[in-house]
Length: 534
Image 1: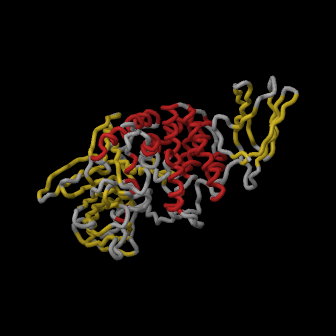
Image 2 (image 1 turned 60 degrees about the vertical axis):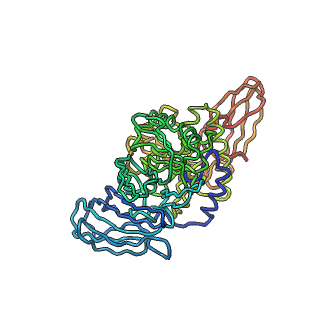
């Protein structure tokens, strides 16, 4: 979730703005993609120690050359003062490779321009400024936690640090033997090496983006919570609050089952839920989710956060945005699918309550940031996180669900995930999936809600006479006329009758036949429309 926790959002939204700032950005995602190569897998062998924060790394990388290339780049933050990485060797196969290292990129020239898979090895070391958080836990124990989102892997892992090029991952962590180690993937080895050292190896076969690979190294209490559709669900928490942590994270198995049953197969080797030192409220690392340290209380107060992060395993981790400007495909989906889970468990009032809060935040945010969800002016991935990508993105899915109906909505979601599982997507891909399922042309829907700023700002009044309610409705925003279905609730004697109208003009009059004068009229009583009453 990276900060925007549903249950804590009022507190954390302020922090988010401090991180994001209010700078006007004037360009889109400018990462230099190299479509001629495709990283197949990474093997990261890391040595950690208690004496210093210095890490020693070996990265073995298998690269598919789809076309002839002169050279290719890997991201790695170079040494500057105390922090950063120094490269001590680059090899192609068993031979020294021709490379340069500068401006935080390793440029490697292959020995030949032939196509096919080639293996490269990078030896390096240093103290990471970010990405790998080396610190003490809230209980004073030394710890190491990967915290890569959005593009911080380059501080400690030589890689293509952008979600467009995903690869399978293996971590081999050599550390003092009293540490417990969890990482992306399934544990395939734990060996005592002597001299007080232990090697722990994890391997994830599914392709993942560097933003969501991680390690957790400290003293943990761990428990197998459940096995859901052959997926082990575990908790990794600090020993000082093991029982509280096991209790708080136990709901993860119920959440996992709901999403598998309703969306499709889970892609990763396991689902570990980890208490961690993280800059975020929650971070949806593939199969190894990190939750902020104080998420563990024993009070079971983070169910919605857990649902959000688990939803990311499908949306963001498996079906991954190909461009940072389309991050709503990750965050908007996780926001709304958390709401869907909570609705499933606690009823429709839970959905309405969440959407009411989200709608107010969308309206307030727009006053200071009049921009669309897919904002092609943003180039810094840290700035794509906003009320737009989270809450407004979630609202778009809520409106799409209402437009198509539950059956077609869920069928479309399942088709979208099946089509783009373990792949990359843009908004147009999601649109095409929903159009294919529904048989509807959704171009205008997607254009006005995702690529157009703002929302309907409605000024209205009603009068009753001669057995009719007459509603005068005007859209007062001046940049765009929205087209949308609007439910009107006619309230009489504590009962409500709902009538739906189609709004297509800036100013319209709707006449509704009723038997007697209503007690009141309510717009959108069931929270299906993102709008603002003026």
